[in-house]
Image 1 (cartoon, one colour):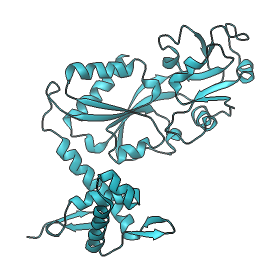
Image 2 (cartoon, rainbow, N blue to C red; image 1 turned 180 degrees about the vertical axis):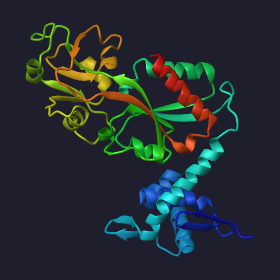
Image 3 (tube, rainbow, N blue to C red; image 1 turned 30 degrees about the horizontal axis):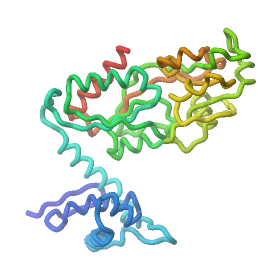
Image 4 (cartoon, one colour; image 1 turned 135 degrees about the vertical axis):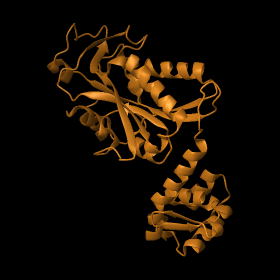
Length: 318
């Protein structure tokens, strides 16, 4: 009996197809460049070119064609994008899922994307619990970026703890494939140098607008600091100093006339709080919350469920 794997519009006859070529196809589709695809797979360029030739022969389609100096997907190549990626992710999830999970003996690696406001307090608590209860579980912590939703969909990360604010990720709704839990509220405040020459015990809206402003723009965003402020707070503000992290803002304030807008938990960092003074934000702004996101393909995985519940438990306790 001939075995056939069907995924979307792609039908693969397993007795005629080297399934390793699916990995090459997935990388070629994403990179649209033979040289970069070869580097990503740690292959020589001739080996990757040979894999592309086999794929073209099997599907009876060029899959990638040159347009100017770039390669573009043919309609057939485009139709294979989602089915091939989803098939590989399902295989990866199946191979990584254990029927039972014992934290004390499990050997796993998780990639967690974390927004900077969640670092104070929460990240040490998570890593401390993992180190004590699951000493052979490895965690890779990565910074937040505007591509976080697609990274979760593509299986490049297991979990994301971020702000529940779709405009930061250039989206109008969360993908149907993602699951979520709302966690803590996030309170934004203002901060200045403790010895600021013109700010006393209160900060009015007029003072705030008159002072030079600093804001953190994480490296994973292409939008300007002004655009991030607009997306977060629905207000137009000129930013006079941009730093590459929210966590750096308390460090640049001492001895300067700047006013920073930052999460309260960041302002309360030990060491920073001794050199700055804080105030409520002088304008009404939207409510913000932390949210934990993951892909539905991880739902049956007991190890993934253990880590999710650990993060939810610690966040709510804090």
